[in-house]
Structures are given as C-alpha cells and as structure tokens.
Length: 290
Image 1 (cartoon, rainbow, N blue to C red):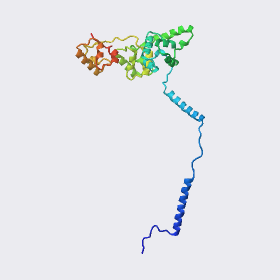
Image 2 (cartoon, rainbow, N blue to C red):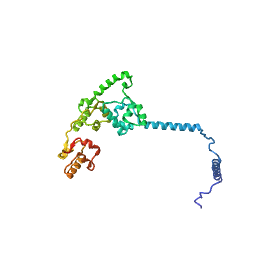
Image 3 (cartoon, rainbow, N blue to C red):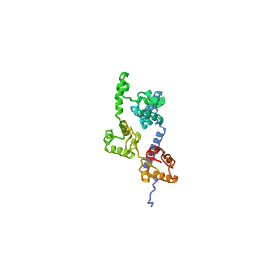
Image 4 (cartoon, rainbow, N blue to C red):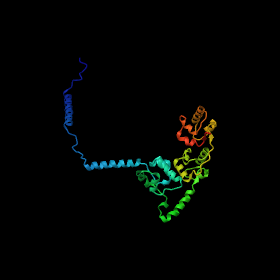
C-alpha cells in the first residue's frame, strides 16, 4: 500500500487551473513588455525663458553682493579716528595728515579741502565723499558764514581736557555708567595721565564706539607730568609697576642690565630679545637712563 502520495500529481481540474494561471501571467508580461508607457509630451524652453532664468540668478547675486558690502553711514570727516580711517581705506600717512591738521585747531569744510589735506586718491575721495556730513553752517551763504563759524568755534573751545574730567563728567557720555567711569579714571591714574588721545582705547571693557564719543567731547589738551624712574637704579618691583611692562619683560630688562652693567640710553631696550617695539614710545614715557 502506497502511503505517501506524490506532490506532483494533479487531477484534470487542477491542471486546467494551473494552465489558465500561466496563460494570465504570460499575457500580462507581454502586455507590459510590448506597451509604450513613455510620455509623448515634450517641454520646449525658449530664449526668453533662459533670459528670464538668468535675470533671476543675476538679481539674487546682486542682492547677496549688496548684503556683503560694508555699510557706511554719514559722518563728519573732521572726526575720523584711526579705526574709522582704516575702514574707509585710508593709509596711515593720510590719517596722520588729517590728525595733524586738526591738532592745529583747523577744520575741514569741503570735500576738496579734505583731499588737499589728506592727499587721498581721486578714486577714494569719490567713494567716501558722498557720506561726508558737514555742519549746517558750512552750506550757508557767505554773508552768514562768519557768524556761524564763531558759533562753531565756541563749541570747539568748550571741549574739555580729558585729564581733568571727573567721574561725573564721563558719566554724561552715552554708554558710560558709574563703573566704566571709575575704570577710566583709575586707568588714567595708573598712567599718571593720558599722554595721547588713543590711550582711552586701552581702558578695559570700553567699547570703541563709546571711546569715540568720549573723544568728541574730551581730548589731551595739556600733557601730564610723568614721574620717570632711572632704569639703572630702579628695583624690580618699580619697573614691574610701570604700565605696558609685564613680569616676563621686567625679567628680560634686568637680565640685560646685568649683562651690560649700565644702560646708557633708553633706546638700548630695543636690543632686548622679545622687546615689544610697538610699546616702546609708551614705555619710554616712564623710564630714563642717567
């Protein structure tokens, strides 16, 4: 007796069903294989479409370029600081000429006069002159100019000496509070007085914009009397207390002094290895060699 039946034996009905299923599968395969499902529609781009696309790209590039440009606001060219001049593209010599002109108590009243004083190039003056903003009296008629100049001169004379300004005076400047005013006065005391206007930028945590506002009201009118010390007789502690000199530089100064026995001139300090030459003029205010 055959207990196990073969799995490959089908009756007539089953064979018919399998044949019908195979016919369906083959028919579907032929249908998908022979049919064309690709779209016959095509998209044609005209020259005007390309021009519109390129125009849109150029517009976006222009916006991006405009956003990356340095924004310059109107300003009085008489009060250009070192930092402002650098931003405008002026050289160190051109900025120095302007500052020298202003220290003489003179004022620039026209674009031409600005170029004559600073000797900037035509291209630079063309770029920055649209942002010049002179006082209103500059543009008045000649018959009213003299009286307006007198008014303006009185305002200039009212500018105070930064070395005599009090805490309360500094607090009147926008952006200067009680703590910041104390830091300015304390640093001025440490320096024995400001010798140059730009020393105000050395005050800790004083924003450049606020420092510029201070210099619009105050300036060094009278140089302070600084008590100098003899480098050959000074102690290590005395030299270390001098502004602009740290512990490491003090050690180098004393090592050099031990090597040469006696320093003849302060200029010799420049020979010290690692001496900060950019600070020499500041340090020389407090030292002498007799």
